[in-house]
Amino acid sequence: MKKKRREKHNFKAIDLTGQHLRLKDHLCREVSRNERCGLLQVAYSVLPEYGKGHVVELHFEGVTISISNLVLHDNFVFFNEIDVNALYLSFLIKGEMLLKIGDVAEERPYVENESFMAYIERFRGGLKMYNNKAYKVVKIIVPQFFLKKYGFMEKSEFKSITDKKLMLPTTPSLYAALEILESEHGDGLVKRLFLEAKVLEVIALQMGNYKLMHKVNNKDKKLMNKMFLLKQYLKDNLSENYSIRELSEEVGVSENILKLEFKRVFNCTINQYFLNQKMKKAKTLLKNTEIPIYEIAEAVGYKNATHFSAAFKRVFNETPKAYRSKL
Image (cartoon, rainbow, N blue to C red; front, side, top):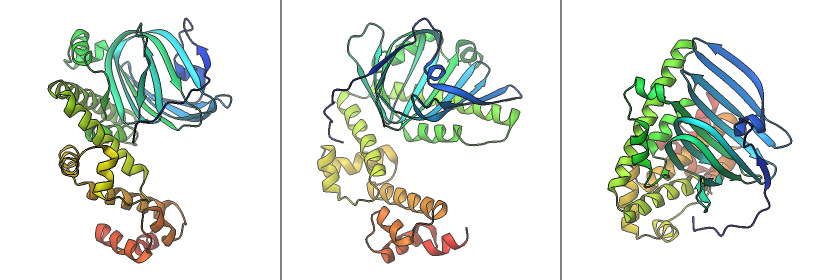
């Protein structure tokens, strides 16, 4: 989590200006399309010359939900200038990019667990993406008439809450809402109404986050960002075990502040969160693989399979062996 020195990369430039194309239109080809009860779902596959992965888009009432999972073969810089005239929400779940927006000379890092919301009339800028890095991005584009339909603020008011600080950490409540967007909930009209409700929830949550951050001083914002970075750090290192002292040194805050802030932001202790993520991964491996239980134990930080089994049973009220035998 310590600040990484940015290496110099050679980027292949792709200029989409004037082509009326979005990035997805250039990188992907359409593989399926299904429309029912006002909900259009389109799936795309990344072209082999650019990388691998897929993009799924959901469209209803002018709203677009885009979920991208991809890896690029080369470092690319994309330039574009395109009319948007909509509320634009972006959530970077995995990966790291560099953004350059408008006339601002400096590139802005856009990193894992960050998000932003802005009313954009016309986008003009650049985007740098790195090779062999897994990217997951959720984007929601909401037209003005949809916002008016539900009584949201005018576009000038959206600008007023995002102009001081564009990037925010993605909160647990937003993650929960975004995960549900990817789930299957009914079909046709039922699914469309469900997605519509979730989009409204995401907008409301993000509006609340911006207003909250405006009230928080810079010191507290930095501390909150550190908590989100720590959360991801733990999730990425489930095979390890850390003391609070080690994590305190990693984050750069005192042990007491670390414990208090993590509990305040995520409503659970560091140890509770780490254990729950370990057990969640273990359950997934038990369900979806044939990896021996002792190897699963090592994958979640237990050198002793007996200790792992005891911990698993405390959480799920059954041993790993019993859980797997029922599948």
